[in-house]
Length: 527
Image (cartoon, rainbow, N blue to C red; front, side, top):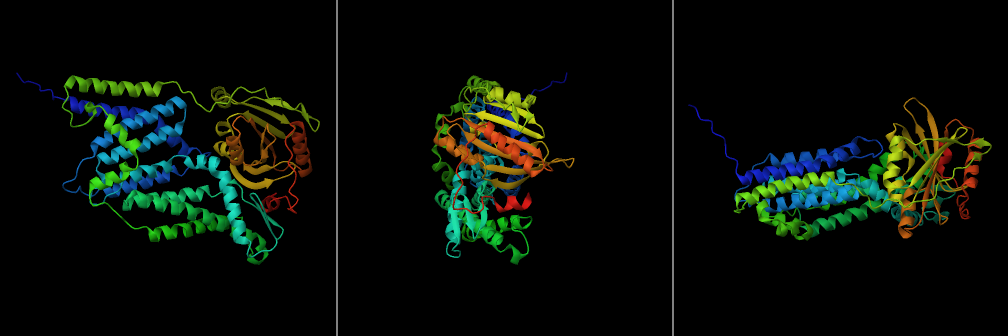
């Protein structure tokens, strides 16, 4: 009689398979969220491009043979996978999706280490490739919201100093620059965060290929930051000069494609010294390459010392313990992904929003929030109300956690399928950011938004609002958004705007007497 032989699966292989399955379970939700950020227009993410670059780097290296006499770094890889699970746990408990993305970066570091990327004929650094993956996450939104305002101030300050030797009639006040009567505003899109992220990604990519020592890599990162800031100062200065000499140039520097070409040109100037000066300092052995990354990040090395011996490939512990460890890993993964999410940045309870009964004789008609909006505010606190006043739609949002609730209107409008164009900023009667939103059916809308606080602050920039909130964390902030048809008469829109300011008792800051023209040039032209 024929005997059927059942292959024996060792406990060690079972443990490795369980570890891989547990890691996959933990990665499913972060991957789903990350792909959503690539596809959702509201994020304006370039993450898919960075991911393709990572695949190209990995393919370039993995297609080359391994070097002889290489030493495996699998112990570190398993430690990193465990540490990634802990980061994923924190992201699940705190309801911070981006932490799950950071955990994916640690997974990539571990997997590339297991593939011996640093020990191939065409080596790349697993550490720097995993850092490059961070740029696939929507970190630019975080940087823009948290650092956008100080970068606006820094860029405006630098541009003023660059322009001052050449123009006598130069007025600088915060993020506003006036050159011979022409007003230039260093608004949030001009803060330089996009160019900063691009320059840093370029340096990280070079580090992945050349694998320099960590201190040298850090030095080039610092140089890239400085050059990116200087490049943005130059760009703003060129825009100011272009606006001043527009009749001689024959084109508008704020119009496309000139505006983007100017931006890309200054970015290229910023990257050129880094590209020319960056020299490979590749390690002579795989041990040195691993030490470069792990030496400066003890928090990553720490799990290797705490990791139970049953998780390491060279284990000689009894098989029963290995089986228990495998089952424990799978159980831990399933528990983590099913834990309840409890965000820390939930808005505290606030008084009910009171919408104006009438505006300019138009009775307000309350509008219901969408199911998604209602669920969001139930989970993260804060509140929102909508109402129609004739042809104007008014939306109020109140929160004590502006990082969670406040955003520029182009974020949600792009997500709804609108093409959004930033028009500039108006400073009277209150600072207001202006947009034009065009729907897929050709309908066009004028969108105005102002952010105010219960301390009396008023700003057009969500980055400034968040910066003020960081300084005064107990402050309550409100977003006041007004949407009117693009074809509406200007006097009618102004009347509704002024009535809204008066009805909501919004702060009216004193006009800057140094500026002759409080309107930004781009706004005047496009409206």
